[in-house]
Image (cartoon, rainbow, N blue to C red; front, side):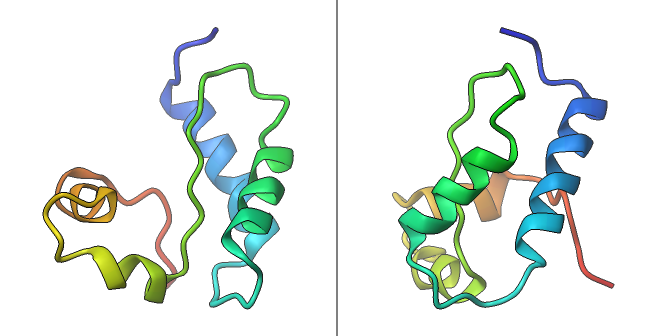
Length: 82
């Protein structure tokens, strides 16, 4: 498997942004994950993909043991709308 470098990360981020056009979604989380996997499926790196709306992420962001909390505290922004 390939290492994820900045170019590859930017490429995957661009694909996901084009696919999802960041917005709230009525689509079920599992359906969003399937679309995300299909979107970056030809990239040969190990990935765990979670696709959350802002409301879904905010629901758990204050629970210290949650993945969302760790992402908000330690993660980095890959895409930000202007």
